[in-house]
Image (cartoon, rainbow, N blue to C red; front, side, top):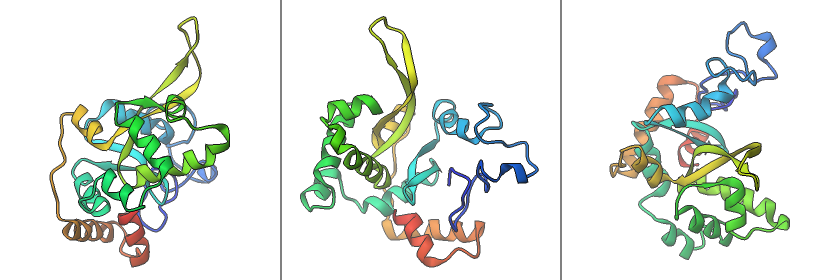
Length: 211
């Protein structure tokens, strides 16, 4: 888990910004210090590492997966299916299709993605749900951030998250995902979870692995 709540599994940092004043640790949320602020780490791993993915991956919230473990999660969640297969069977909706078609063309910033996929303001909730769904199903993933450009060519406003396909993310880092058996992948991940947290409940483990 990327946030300060292990959610019954395991977290990089097991306390959030609301609790940090009660914890004796050099780690502090939302200070802007790239070395000690977990919020800064999410982008650092995307820019400084070629073997870690960060996205909304677990319980519809953020988390990290290393390259060593990514193929197992990918196999467990995708079950050998591609986007078209799931879309034709109604497992992914029209909002997800519109987003995926844009992201499939290359890396795109969040604000541009919404525009290029023709989402209106009234569709904001549909857009957000589909965006999370595609990350959870491991079709798209975060790949960095950027800022909007004004007419004068200068950057302005808050940073905007960049997205790409999962396959594009790893290819751009010089890696390809090996094909793994879905059931064996589940067992490998479950065993690792129990090494880290022996009290993890099976129902929680299932949700963590399958998304």
